[in-house]
Image (cartoon, one colour):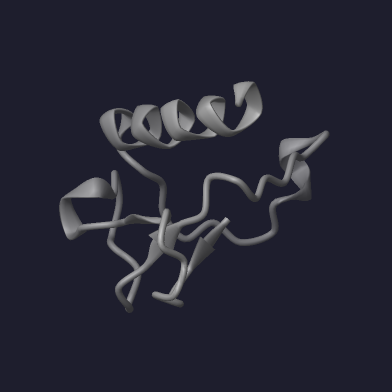
Length: 69
């Protein structure tokens, strides 16, 4: 999940160079403990942007920490 709220202490702040496409309009933060899965890519009606691989790996690394702790 991505949020513009800053009160989540363990969120990962996204910088403009973290986006593979255009950055979002507001400073955003990834909440790696909050996941949503899609069964079908066709469920996505509107695509804004995506994260570069290095930042996605940061998110996955933190997520794995939540799952294994």
